[in-house]
Length: 348
Image (cartoon, rainbow, N blue to C red; front, side, top):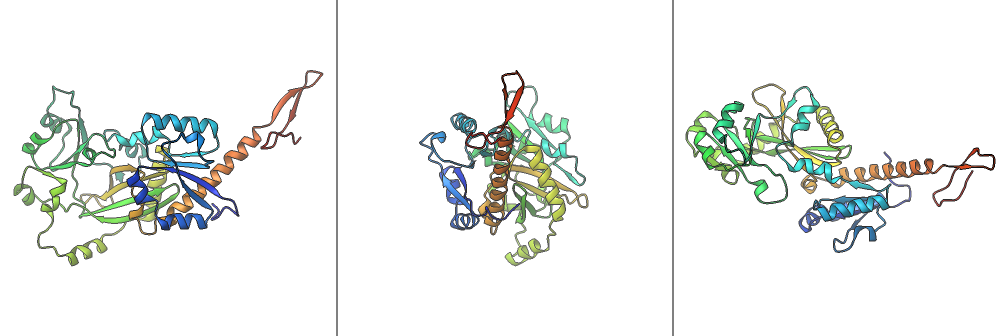
């Protein structure tokens, strides 16, 4: 796609919670985008969206029914404007029961998800112990909240080391096998066709010895227990540097397939390398509209995404112009075709 709008301005309205505004809309992004013909404009949430603008595109991270209705009204009035992203697509990532189904559907070589199971709070006949046995889950297990949204409860996770630890978990919950992965997680950020992968320190590998000398249930907020107590900051840095990144071609292919399957522009996914199988990767989580500002020079991946959207907007407008050909019936009852310009004037 082109790197600029050749003198045109592309107007993006953004509707975000205050904490998302402060972390996402930073000066480096505003300036870089503006230099390339993109203006980022805050949407006033106290006013109807259809009364604001004009916007070529709307970015948002709001999900309530009133906002959904406003987006629908805006789209009806502005059919060529691009909503990033459709709420029905976003909502699929709010449920950890089905969140990772899309990964299995890709059927890519060397890519999968950990073994997991969902326990419903309404299922009184099966205990967590029964589900673990039925699904063949092996300890250690990570217990996650079913809903993956912006609430504090959604981010509360536990490491379950044995059967006794299950007694401290209340359904509904998703139980996911913990897989040793060398203490490194790959966080892949996607903005349309543009992808960046960064390494982050993760939970250290769990040995049988550690499992036998610990509590049965540990909140992730206290998970540092499993870090090697003798491991210095220097050795941690060396470990991170030594961790080999997944091939970029592989990351791009996974990202593109996920983007198309989920119908989303903005997301990230957490991926680990399974220590048990050479070159086997597992996706353990997918998030909508993540903290892009955590990525170095994030403005250089988001601005090209904005420009791609500008091109898509132009294509929609061109398509609408082509469809503006109308058919008239002349005095002899024959169809007469004429074309109108963007202002509705005949041009043929």
